[in-house]
Amino acid sequence: MPAAAMSPRPSEAGRPVLRHLRRAAGLDRNPLCRTADRARSRLLVGAVLLAVLSVAAALVTAQVLLHDMRADARRTAPHRHQVTATTLAAAVDTRDRPLDAAAARATWTLAGATRTGTVTVPSGTPQGTQVPIWVDDAGAAAEPVPPDSQLAVSAASYGLMALAAAGTVSTAVFVLRRGVLDHRAADAWEDDWTAVEPLWSGRTDRPGTGGER
Image (cartoon, rainbow, N blue to C red; front, top):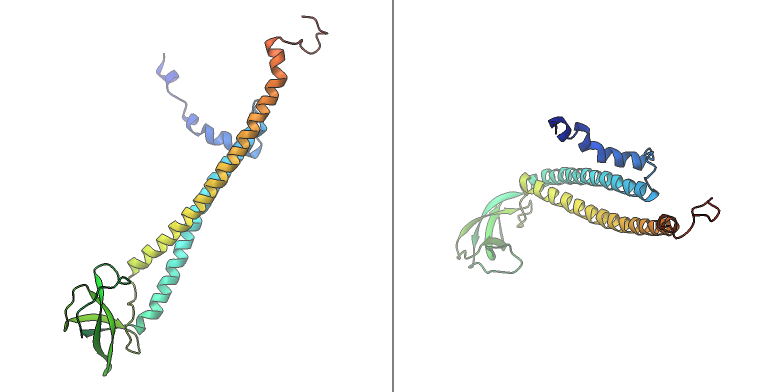
């Protein structure tokens, strides 16, 4: 067999996509194409478009959140100050602290005023240890401004969660709708076969024969 006959034509790879697009738009003139086939193509094209829109929406969501987080960080940064605190007692592990972190009573000074409070320190920190902490303008212990990398990760996580939620809903709708279409197609095939089978098997006369075989 010639090599040209064995190799597929370049356009064959894109034919299924074009076929579904034509069917979805009602431009497929194939007489064997049924209503259910056109409905399946519209469902498939709609699912692909929805997937693309979901990805775009997730990206926009992440970008908007990152912009807002960065703006909030810029507003907060001037009101955070790093000082050195001295622990008044050994650190105590608590469940509400991050891994390898503990709580300890400590004292620190800001603008000549001495403050005392509970701060987060590494687990196992002994009494009298000097640790860097962040405080607000009033001198109270406060969370530091998160780095930009942490903001980016947080925004990306929210975007992925939005994408996962949209994907879950879209998949459920697609599966349910496809099931309905398959059920309708099976019923249509059964009705068509009921009408054609007697003629095909010869159990009844063909129309217009007047009952003669």
